[in-house]
Image (cartoon, rainbow, N blue to C red; front, top):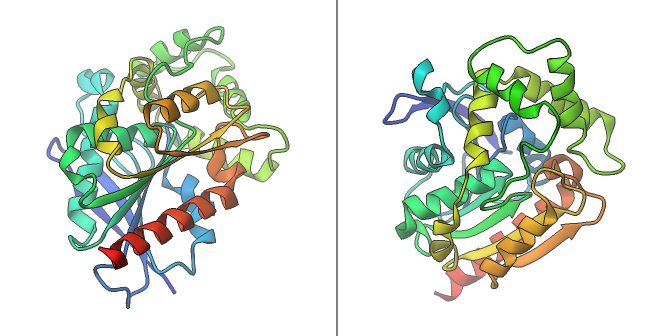
Length: 296
């Protein structure tokens, strides 16, 4: 049975990251590690449905709340918050790997939405890890650039207010919850939608808005050369309004060695909507990692 350990890790710029490790106490240090990066405005618990499906896998699982999300602090002064970028999250992932993953453990990185960009940011920041320590990557409902934000009426104005710490206009919280519901595809479980809404509602408005600005200008294509050295799987939802499937297909064109799975009725929130598909992708990547290690 996996034991859950939580600890706080301090980044060089002063953010305190809440990091969670699930592992069998008897697991050897050289067993593989799955590191899961969550998306914008939710927290590490968004990955827990997938973690539950992997309870019997002999793998160490590491999750953390991205800076400013969940129990993690943002690590920036108020006047600096608007300058936060996806590159910050890639450097945070590097800190997580160095702090809690045994140096002999091969790593599978998985990222949902902004978390996928986090993986790509790490690939740009630390390309030396890819093909050596990092052996595989799962990119879920994500894009390297051209995120579909700023297209809904009043969205940018609401985000500007939130970024300044000002209260939202009347109906602003309801609008955010409606946006979250709209991120799910057909046939979503109402309990999953409510769980996502609760996570978003618990995220500080300044964090929500600051990363909104970061996503508007994101461009993580410089991480592609490092990702070419590892096994990659891309999963997308055809009904995703935030990271349209066309962006996922662009990832596949840039990384032609990657496998590609699109979920016909899936939206953006695939850790809830396509839990078993993602768990199967993880199992497949882990099996390939183990096979390559045994033949090395």
